Image (cartoon, rainbow, N blue to C red; front, side, top):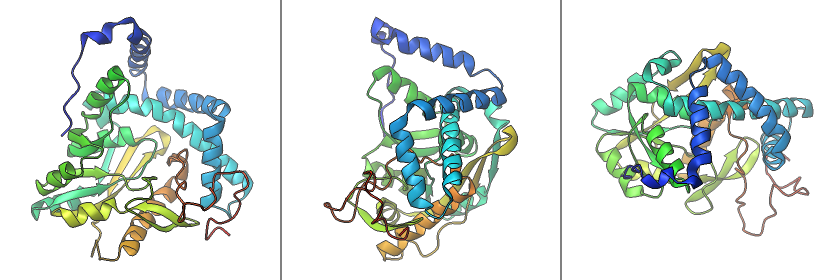
Length: 319
């Protein structure tokens, strides 16, 4: 379990004044209506698209790799929409960390909780699989209104930011464990906790299988999901999260638990996980976090990078 960062008098030193100013400004902005926050987020996203050229190239490459048959005009439209969503994510962090419960409830739409209840009634923990959607801070807060959960936590390098981040995220969580505390999460699952786990990003070549993800035939996919499912008395339950149209808020949709999982076939099992992520992404592809170098690891260490300008081949099904 992560020990909660404590407030320190050092946070009042001049080196933190600029951060405090930004925090105060964002706190004031947080009281604006939700619609206004999302419109502001779209504006911030337009600036990010213009000035974050390196991330723009990564996102464009990911979209091209995953959807090679999508016309270039549609890929470009998806890219621009994704950056608008990235701008909104800034304000959704504010919502997740600072909004009072009564405001969050107005945006909360929750379905499928009976699947969690059924697992807990059997005396099992729940390994809740979520994907890296840009609105995740707000969606986790929505889930926490129904059932506070346990999640991994990565400390921030800035002490004041770490203090704010921990206490903000803990509004949706029962408690958190360190990002490398595998035993801590297994213990939580054995204690019938609901534990969030996000298996859809690049966690390196160790404990990974190379299986399809969209049109990329060999995508490094963590076997961490299988590790937890095998080591703990739990069921694995996937969840969809997405922002609803028309400023209605956030939908958290809990799906039925995976059956015969893990099966003992690691490649087949992580393929099942990737197929669930694909289904989640296709619901709202613009809301997914395309800015991450998802396909950085290759099957062989000397294989060419898919992110080099000349890398137009070798991604698998997209060829």
